[in-house]
Length: 225
Length: 313
Image (cartoon, rainbow over all chains, first blue to last red):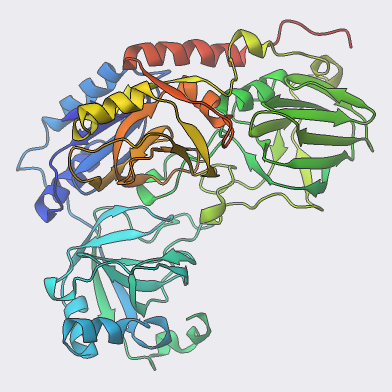
């Protein structure tokens, strides 16, 4: 369950699947491991694992593992973590969601169905990665599951909401991307100058709020998408 | 202090790296060759975290606008200062108006140019390291003017120092890279493991600050090559379905979804970083976590040691 990853990291494996309950345990354990001892540098939660980066000039693997094991004993069913909840306004379709129609056609439903299904459930930020601030959100309704695109786009604009496999996500920066683009949010996911540079944190609970394209919120921002 | 007159290849500013944001998907960045970065700073009594110019695969010409002392380390580069040529791993005095030219001439990929007092630049997310893909900082361009902080001691005491690199780091194009077995080692066939430890790899043309794609005999997986994405580090060796390993480097993504056969130890990363595409012959050898950490501790203190041999030049 605890394995070295090189000479400077320790991998905690709590399972081997994408499963909401398992991921909840990862985020609960991650919360227990904040305010660490000297030499623990940072933690990276993922679907079913947690990677602990430590400084081998300060801690040996055994010392780091001892600390982790001690914390893991506190991870029982009575431990509750209250996740942060965020609502993300989305303009679905149009120029900023060019794949909405294609997803609907491929799934044999209407674009309005895609919007309804995508926005009616809560998602968890299972992990973050790809580019700074990119949230991997799950789990997507089975009716919307699509494989990744065969040829990724070379440019996807910041704020685009996309789906692939059993996940949905939002591009924080202009970047290449291989997911299906279904909408756009004016929220800024990454602002390096801000005191809280990232909109999302791993473990957050997120819902999407569909907005009409003539909504005041989007009035001034049309040029961006 | 220093004006960039001309640059080819990739020149970026790097401190020792960006820590604390990996859970948000922000790579550590920092130098490709930490030993050379650290030695360049120690030649000038800078803090180990001071900002240095990393020059990759090309050349850079700078002009001093004030008197200063510079140090250049790395592998495969040469330094011209005014009318003289200097070897790497030395510090030298530069007068206002003089030109300094750092150019790749032989085997190696990366050079590190440090200035007395360290370069000053904007800190983003607690670090001054450049991460181009994430838009954190930008590559150096002609016309950029770089300021330096206050030197630790007077300039004359910092100039004309040598760092005895050959005592501590044997840069080579046929290195033995030490690794620790990876967390998914059991998902490779026995044959695949033997291939990895028993054959020779070279760096492919497809390499950058994010990762080094190697070429050699394909490594066979026991089942499929995919993994539910999990955290990884600089030095993690991922093996996708092609069987050709990819070593994650300074700008490595924080998570990855391929099986990891092993992890390069920190003490061996500088050797790997300086291996050239096509020319290098890389072998891997297993070592324990305890031995790897002991090696790192020794090397770390050596790279910080004040140089003992001020030369007469």
